[in-house]
Image (tube, rainbow, N blue to C red):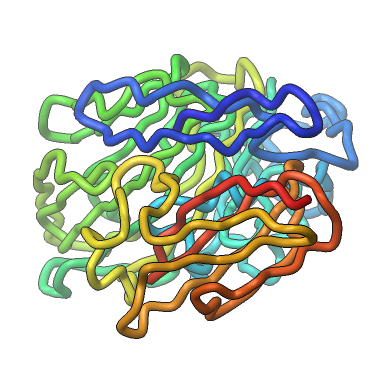
Length: 373
């Protein structure tokens, strides 16, 4: 994801270059945090200020755990193949204090977990470690599916788009058996590298230096075999015999003891469009631009032409393919949303300036900067 650094109120952060990831490839240059989100309501309390007594088996007496509010720049973050999907709902939350938090209580743990649009926000802070029991280390903020599967249930598929904001290292995805531990894991290293972590095979470096960058992940698992796709490409496969128990998908941040007892620094990642067994995928992705890395090329099928108090849409699509347009200011704030835009239709904008338009066609996103006079 290549984004030019915002310099002034009218400086663009629109221009992206789609980057198709190959194994061990470094993907473009990173975006700054200020381009990807805004934060309000801080500062966050230090972990030490809670004065937890170890072991702290019942963290409920300390909740709620408020935190600063993260507002995602959805125009930049919710791109790629799957981030248009709503957040998968049948999940529970596992963090430093509790292991099976129901969705109805997610709001009590805003310090470590939030949602904005289709994006889940996972974060941990310097000095943190597990306080649910007497286990040392193992800081985490992750969710997991409430329904498991086993061999014979057929292929189960996890898809999501990841955006790495900051890292202190950790697992960011697991296909995990309750009897036989994890079968396959995706790791985010302290240097920003993304690792395919096989339990029974040599690990694979998927991409390097991914802080400030995004990628699409798909993992398929049938309770014995699994396949891992990175930015639309099948990278590797493997298996883990799991004759008993069931397997669940887990995603978020799991720091783990191997990375040190305490968090050395703050860590945050965004996961957009995470869902299980997705439906409604693009029926003809080859016809609508690059679906690999950051699917943020300006569409070859749509052009927005600047006019006074708005812009006019020129689209080459027909045969029932709809064009939806969302318009954002350069701070990522939504200005308007227009569905089923027709060819040559005029779209009015409240005031003159430079805007970022997200164009959606068959669930694929493209971007164009447009000046309104």
